[in-house]
Image (tube, rainbow, N blue to C red; front, side):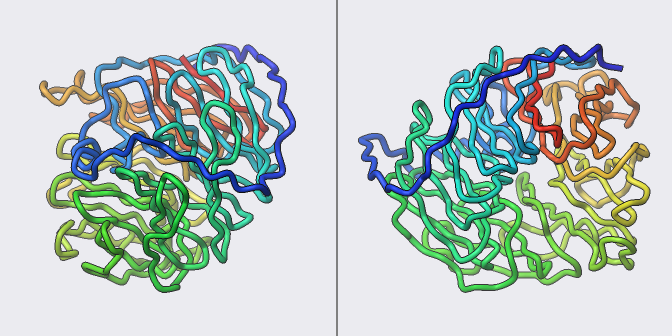
Length: 410
């Protein structure tokens, strides 16, 4: 078990109304080609600048051993912290149910600034070129100065923005519950393209090469071209895709929530598709739901299934090539926190180099499971419930909880 819970109460400053639009200029624009190279790499650096660490949603960090955690600090932010944190340049960025975006010191949780939106912030921020980009239930995507919290620009959609944005070069891509995927200029928020309206989009988009991968509330799985948003391929499933897919090499893996949350029928709950064509590689079929993004390590994919929203929850590992199930571990509550893979050594084989899976749970605890076997490595009790997904930076894990706190584990 994790250690006792030392509590650091952190002052929350009042936010701004977010009405005035300030156009922000920048002389630094990354090329699309350079950014595409970054999306496929395993994280081994300090920053965790977006949901799952990068626009490829890889969720893998190497060069770090982690087998026991204790709370280093916690910051009280008020409303439930369901947003997943981002970390850049020693600052943690996260939203809460009261509509605030907070910036805190990664070292000790000291409040740096806060910004008030018009609705709950579930979206995970993306930090790029001096901006913090984040969506709100009020229907806007906000770009905030990462140092001061001042609004640079905002873009209005016709539905709540739950989706965590992806930044590729000087383009921001995100989804809205109005059923569209949007691409905006990072510099000033100008619209570059948007898709036609369809079922609501909850999960963030995933970048793989020159494609944008996403799912929606109609269980539609699609690939779009980054440059113009045109549809490359599309597949239909049953239920809903509520989290970002993950891609590695030629394979993209989508998790699906069942058509019924309480008693889902049998359906394809985890689907592996060819990135370029959308052709099915394999699918797992059972009366399960997958509420978080899978994570891929070596030749395995890790995910958590829920048998009915209030029923049995199991962490699982499967072969990436064919979907063969390798191990399972029953958990103490529902999990929609997306797991991260910590400490995998891609140069070595064996259990000791496979790393650990880290994720939050509705039982209020943060789990570390051995990736090779599913055995429990550590459990840290935090709060009544955890919906947030973890961010990993400089040997620390940051995660929000429904008690209104952001926790730093080390």
